Image 1: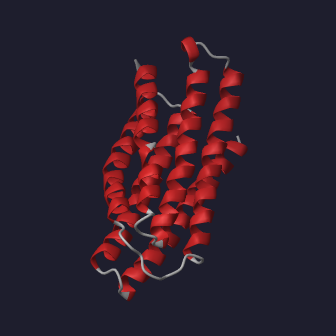
Image 2: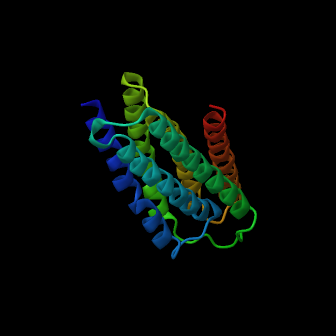
Length: 203
């Protein structure tokens, strides 16, 4: 029963995360704030990490039978990959924050809607993964709980930045919130990625 719940949650994570980068990419045709561009990069990297976690989980729990050494090896690979995606996303976001032009931001509403929905969905996934890991500790599930905690906090920052742009598109307040939101998000995401990698490497 526990395995079925974990598989279902991981599968739903993939399904619900997949449209995000596509919608954000379409939104970039109308708006180009640094937070919006950085959010696209972040969501794309995270999606790769979530897909990797799902694939590895399916491999290591196939038919309910798994060699412990093989399981630990695959879990380590998966979690290092997820951590690396978080680091890459954070670094690229920080780079974009200082290279994207501060001119007209355009329409950021599509990205804002995705970010607001992300706050709700990611918080629910964070709580679900945390509950599953407490019931039966699993390295992949534990890292997903950390990833979704980061995602929920990041989406909160992104929502605030994009909301300020939507309300006050040409103000200095929106500019600094846009820049500041990107910096905070990128640093936090990279920190979570480094922490995840170091934990797995040192084991």
